[in-house]
Length: 225
Image (cartoon, rainbow, N blue to C red):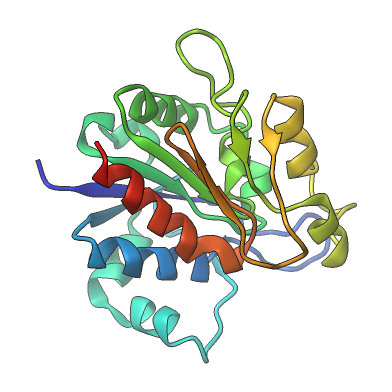
């Protein structure tokens, strides 16, 4: 079978009651996508509701992002994402949860996406997430009833980083704290510095600066299968 990685994207586009827009953080897809493609992986996209996934964090000076968004195939894929119900776990070597604040509202309760994630993991695949992407992991349970993150090293957008961007009282929960409540062993560094960790086929990163490193660790893990 061809080597394939599935990107999971938020469908939520409003930042609480602030009146600001949000969505998936585009650099956290574009930079890992470049790493995965270089390693020979094909990419697909799933979102909570399907269809066009809302975008955030586009920096016009980021050449990797510009090239990613300029690609016609990518444009079509982002406009026509499928839902988790339409996805066969058997087709994918890994699932990668992109961040963006939108994830905090719809990822945790996306039951079909959680079931898909558990299926990919339990068939020997890798699960990855970066920044707020681990919001998609907080309610993923394995067949034995344990949380996927339980007992594993996990990195995610920290409480300190949430405070630094002034959104502690806007997001519906604090990601770091909730992951810890699920039994994750939180690992982190200073605000907005690169930090990623791999533990038992779970690869996570702290913030946007960590996205490419997460992808590199996923590629390393898959190479050992």
